[in-house]
View 1 (tube, one colour):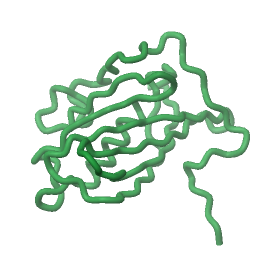
View 2: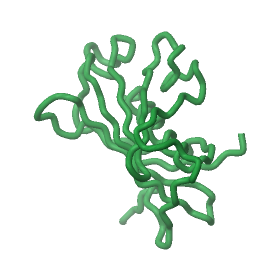
View 3: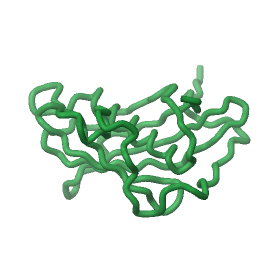
View 4: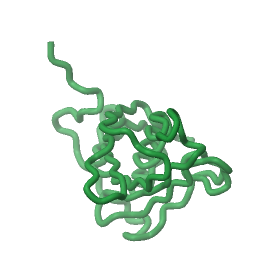
Length: 163
């Protein structure tokens, strides 16, 4: 039996146009909440993920895996890596100027991530559905070290919110 991933866009899905009031290319995307564990600068043990607007419908983000982010000794906790993906996907909504919440997140962990690693995330390809009023996106993360392959990848679905 074949299965279609729930984050795979249906036929006829369209790529949205960047909102005219979206932040300009290269600018830092602000945190939505200063105490957010993912992107807030006031959370004492958070990821402190920093994201910047890319050239088109994409963003780049980075954070450093600290001692507070461990699962197994010396390794990043997978849930915290998923949180970083969630933040990177959510930051894409700044380009659409449309608030959204995560409806589904699918992550594939390819290699362990050591504590102290500086991780770079690239989030791109938002796709809209008029039928479901949601967006599906994909993101990947690589480690900032020479000759290190892809560590994890993720796809997700965000539903627009009126909040």
